[in-house]
Length: 478
Image 1 (cartoon, one colour):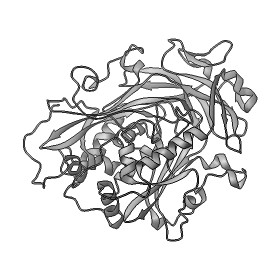
Image 2 (image 1 turned 90 degrees about the vertical axis):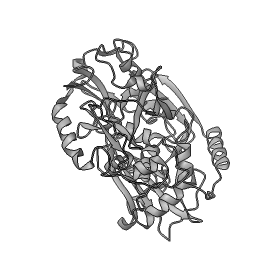
Image 3 (image 1 turned 120 degrees about the vertical axis):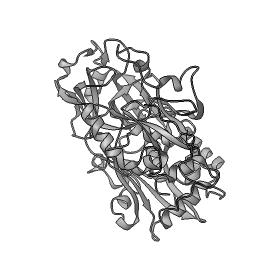
Image 4 (image 1 turned 30 degrees about the vertical axis):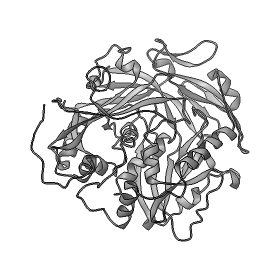
């Protein structure tokens, strides 16, 4: 169905158009009140079955003779290999682990069109085999290079022409971004937001939503997928009024004011980037791809049904068979990484000089492309740190886990990338620091303004994917 109108939805003051879109919940062309019925309909239409199977039952996948690497017969998509890691951390500084190797750069793209002058975003109801709840709200285009070049022999990717090629619209954002470096080696995807002016057909699995409607949905568990969250974080920070809607509350007013700029951050951006560069220079991260078989001597054990660590921590590599009614391919099998525990990704924030700042860390992960990226204050699976020395526990973890509920401003459990991870989930938190919080950052943390984070999210290799996901949540608090 093609929707177009030249009439404004209602009279509005002159302001940033994306700020106006962010202010609209029920005045868009698709009222939010009808969203749940639409999503339920898509869940029924996209009937699917995910079945865990033995490795030997996978179609097209096998363990490579000699190395034991788990590979696809086409040589494409991805592989599961071994990684040998040396770091300079005092506790457990050397290890080996399975890791996903996927050198292809995929496209994560959101299409934007203005109706009545108000930007609307074309979102997709999409099933991924590792999703909790099955169908989640995805970008307009979410495709690996193997997908959109047809390696699987399936149907084409709708709307791809608006992002690649001669029909591409006006670019709002276009940046390579990293993905989960604890489980991927050097993984990147192209995050894009493109605005078009001509007619666009709204297919049944797609729906036009305002930015405000999507931000409202970001407060629901397991609904807005990781790919949508990372692309939303790439939206430009506003330079003017955000729209007509009043802030949610005192904290919302502080978020809005801090996002709009005009204030001096406690750490100037040049100084922040110099600190990150210094961390990348001083910290040690030596990565060496090794055969998957060679992880066996480092605690990993493979049987017919999975590859797991002997301590029962971290993650398991499993195999699944997928039956899906409306995907490019109707059925397939593949490996997935299944984390053992739910993670915690928490950002501690506080006003400094009237500007809301977030305490971020420079985090080193096994598969990082450039040693370290900026990450949330706390980013870990707490279960991995049971029975470890106190000095090895993540900084500020206990402060977050014992936070006064009255100071928790955002608290949502989101699923991570369902195309490669099975029921991977993190509890995303924004915690306003109390008056007694000792916020003096050490060597690995710095206070950064929200506007600085928003601007850095539009550049490659500064914010990791979990921090970008959380930044999308911070935007909803205005």
